[in-house]
Structures are given as C-alpha cells and as structure tokens.
Length: 291
Image 1 (spheres, rainbow, N blue to C red):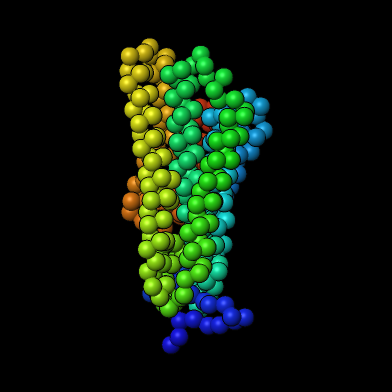
Image 2: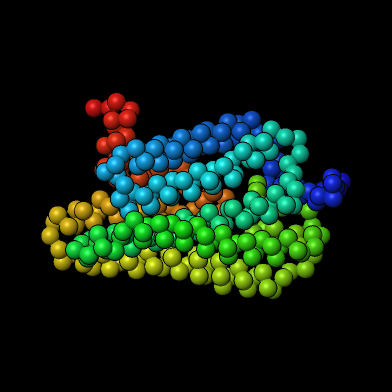
C-alpha cells in the first residue's frame, strides 16, 4: 500500500511510531491528554504567579517565567497533533507541517538550553558578585537575553528547515510519533550541507556550548560558596538546585530520546520550580488556600 497521498500537490508522511498500538490507543490518548492538561496548567500557573506578584519581577523569576512560556509552546506544538493521531485510523502529516514541527521542536529545545545558561549567569552574578548585580542584571539586560534566546535559535533553525524544504522526498514513513531530525531520512539524497550546518551550528554552538557554560558556571559558584558563610551556601542551594535539576532532567531525557524531552520536560519544569523555589512555593500555597 502507498504510504502517501497527494492533495493540492502536498506530500503526506506516515508516522510509523503508532504501529502496533491500535488496541491501546484510547489508553494512550487518556495518558497523553492527562500529560497535556497537567503540563499546560502547571506552566500557566507559574507564569501567572510571577506576572501577578510585583516582588517576583526580578531577572531570575522572569527567566523562569520565560522558561514556562517556552514549555507551553512545546506543549502546543506536540500534544494536539499527538492526541488527534491516537484517535485517527491513519497517522499522517503533510511534509510542510512536518517541517514546521521539526523547526519548533529543536528551536524551542535550544531556547530551553539558552534560558538555562542565562539563569546560571544570573545566579553567578547574584552570588559571586552581589555588589554589581543590580548594575549588570538590569531590565535592559534581561530583555536583550530573552530576545537572543528566542531569535538566534529561530534564525539558525530557519536555515536548516529551508534547506530541508528544498530537498526532494523519496521516502514517506517516519519511525516516530512526530517529526524530528528523522525528516532527513526522507530525502532522496543525504545533504552534507544540512548535516554539517546542523552539527556545527545547531548542535555544537547552540546545544553543547550552553550545557558546558551552565556546568562551568555552577562549578565556579560551588567553588566560591564552599569558602563562604552558611547563609551564602543556603542561598546558593535554594536558588541553584532547581536549575541544576531541570538541566539534569533535560540532558538525561535527551540522551535517551528526544521524544521523552518533548513529552515530559514541560511537566517536570514547573513541578521542580514550584516546589524548590521558596518564593514561588509560598504563592502556590496561598493560591490554593493551603496552610
């Protein structure tokens, strides 16, 4: 049987990850729907709390709010199509939509890493250089960092996506639930330009470098607070630990499979920040009338 159809000259791709799941698709639908609701609700709550309380309008909390907004975008990109596919007889996606999903998947993933790097720098300046912190982490600096964190990945991924769109498609099945870099296997000829650009620009510069920057920054913080007072150590632990946990979840899941990053990371992030950040947790308790 053919794995694609043509409608208005559009190429359709079959998502092969759903094979063998027909008997359990309603169960998977309920599971994914639950993840979707929890993810969107929890991230929206974090954004609302930071937006609503004036004393949380500091760089650290603004970066956390941006992180939650990014997680909302990840959820919107993945969950609706995934839910539709679980209830459909055939799981197909147009190649243009597949490219858009690929673009958003990696663009938003890189944004996560850059925001984690921004949070690490913010904590480094706050803990290691507290006297100059207000002069460095100004509102202007925060805006510049946020624009950079979203604009640069979008620019880089646009190049890769446009190059992929120009490639001729000869294969019409993706072994997965949604479109990731597996779209390259659909092309008739492997493009060295796309491979080199993706490896050097997207993976190394925007992927690996931010991770090493975060690890280096927290190593410096750890070295400095080791020689400091108990109060400084406690402050460092309270504000740095959630960021490190998020980074560990992101890298651990990403090492296993990008699918797990996309599905579970948007849910883990608000849980970690909600319970580990004291100021956010206090507002959560008030919001839900807990004593």
